[in-house]
Amino acid sequence: QVQLVESGGGLVQAGGSLRLSCAASGSIFSINVMSWYRQAPGKQRELVARVTKVGTINYADSVKGRFTISRDNAKNTVYLQMNSLKPEDTAVYYCAADLTPRAGSRGDYWGQGTRVTVSS
Image (cartoon, rainbow, N blue to C red; front, side, top):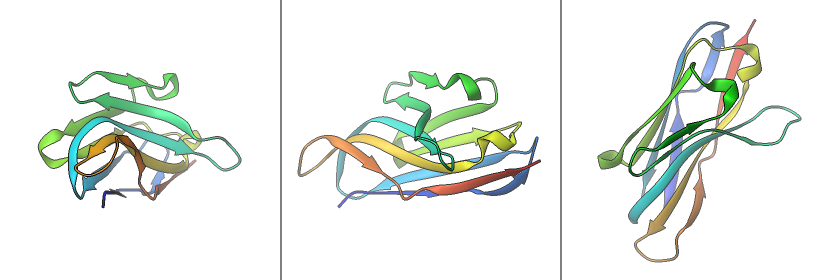
């Protein structure tokens, strides 16, 4: 069974930094894309950043220059370094992985989410 577990959320003042981690575990054959999404209260879930297996990276315009996504393929882990945080970054952050398990079909797997709150 595949699991994605996030950590690193919390409360921070505007201008501060946080680092989120997400580790995928279980019977995994390969991981293609690892992503971070967020969902603010009353809003739809949105893509924050994504990184492919070969290192191609995309960011939402709202976080470019402030957030950095990285990935450790050996550890099946993705990170999100968030700097210069703003109150509008407040949301539940979700990790997602497009992966192929050893038994089963390729699909999207999600973590349980970690809350980030940025105070003004």
